[in-house]
Image (tube, rainbow, N blue to C red; front, side, top):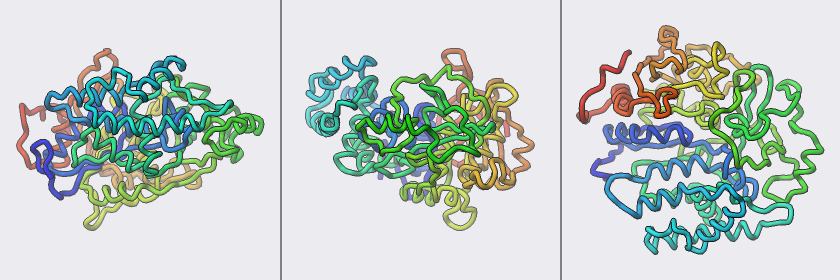
Length: 477
């Protein structure tokens, strides 16, 4: 196939594990590296998000957390060439309704009835196709309205609404992704793969070093309510993780949640902050999937994800939230085995961790307790290697880490995680240091696109000549 003048061959591809927002800034970098290698590019995206507008879709209609999938699909809309319709489609799927529930409901009805200004530059054939799935979702929302439960449209993502309508119509999450990919004109050599192909909701939980348990991705990363239930200990917590009274109160609400489900997983998390979150009292020791009743499960990875891994020449763990964007895609059955296939034709030779440029809520607390590069590597290896509670929180020989991470790319910045290059080398892991650029707000440092592209090309290999001046002087092995 040919895309934007670059011929994609049947060479082994590149698989990127990432979440949504943070890794969107590196999409152009990954695209250049894939085009330079004339290979496919697959993004593996978690589906455990239960915050923002996804939380209300899950509460009323059920289904996977789709916000990160939608975010990446819209980010991949080609920006080359002037196209008013392409710009309008990106604006449409990125649009969020008013934070006021009443105004948001009226705005939604304007979209359903094609009265909203968002439709202005979208041609009629495409508009009516999109609107048909918007109407499917609207019908479901109206059908499921009850005195105890009505849909809250506040801050709803139009893209999430469309993707949910397409999933409900087709009965297939992958089909809905294919439809949105087609509407967004995502290049043929790029795939968006949910880690679990499902029509059901999947949640995660985390334990801290002080034995606190936190339930639900939103509570782990950017909570809108207190982050943990009182007196909840990893050793003594009951299977339900909550009080009977609170459960019964939630059971009186007619929504898509199963009776007896954890109230923590049934709350509306529409409003939360991605910044200025309180620090966790201790480090996260591990994360795992849970069923609606709080019991630990290990779901199977999507067959398409496993196929992409078996056909990969390189894997990249992108920047983003370690325990809520990367780890949930490493936990499902089959992923660790695919990453750890060190022999034969399916072996992945290069596995690159792009280290975050700063410490966040999940990788703190700030100061001496903040996670280092070695801790990042260990967390990835243990998640993919299936190290669970019964095996001990921190038991895995360091020598095995190189089976899951072969290279660490990091920023030379005071606020970034510390990197012990000698110890990583002792584990058989190479390091590449880059000098980044200051963020526009003056806080922290971000990767320079040119330097990161060249670093990835140097590690993965590229047969095409480089374009523009070299920035290899920013690399230190």
